[in-house]
Image (spheres, rainbow over the protein chains, first blue to last red):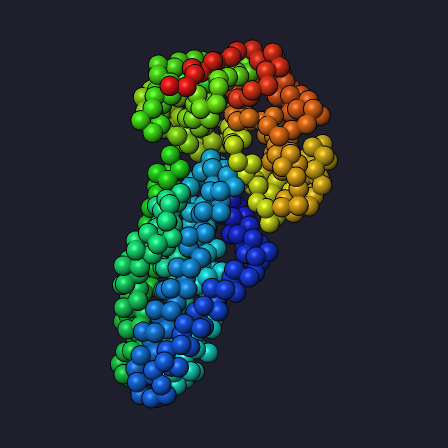
Length: 222
Length: 202
């Protein structure tokens, strides 16, 4: 069971490596969107510092959405998804592995790059760890919730747009807590409360999302 | 071993078949025949549990497959319409992963010998021809000799005469070992022990 999960993660990472361009696109998208705001708004340090957490988090949401529609669609098209459904291990485990691979490819790099982006917004360097930590805790939740949406919209025409309409509202709590933690920390009140709530969201989504993804996949494959 | 009772399948408000019952015993090969669109693939997807029948149920050794789930999946190999190989991986990598997913660990020698039996070079699958792709997918059968049930959807499609002979041989060997093979094909070799003829369109 664990073996199957590990081999799925390794397979998806290998596939991502063979198609490095796609991964780089999502990361560049994040960097460019987050860089457009200072250019559009102008160099007003106080304003930039105030909007930084929100803008960086929204850019992260959009960037992690980009690759969601391909999460199951590629496996669906070449028939491997059928084999995953008929595999020897529970589908929930496979679904969790798929979401984990998505996070490593689409979420983890964002947390790594975020401090660099924060530089453009003149965010005090004391806030970098809070920002990176909030993204580390929040982006796996995005991958889990997003995978539910991706599984539900599998095989639907125009699924990409439907997917964003379905998933973005569900991202709101993560956005509020993630951006809020950095806001609170910058106001000197410490963002621990929000970070702990994010961690709670992460635990809850790890516990429940895989089974929701599995159920959605079974419905879509009928 | 495999029993279907009163299966009914309705797709897009069209009844494909109704009241379909049959039982396949160990050592039998069942061919599902019928024109295009008569529900061969749907029937096979029902038998492997991907599709829930509108009515009726499928039982494996007396137990409904809906309640067996992974227990049933472990004892079965399903070869679908799509070859289930990843274009960006090599034929060998594909084979290794599909083995792991079905709970077996294949050594690289075993994989190499399965590929050479099927005459597939260990290239990235996107560089293989359509027929070689099917062969790369079918090489999975070499690791499934202990699986009591093979469900094969058009296993001979896109294969040349040699390939057909090879797969035919594998199916025969499996049946002789006392296992069950259910498959669909338009190429009737007359070797099936049982045939189910699905109705025509409409």
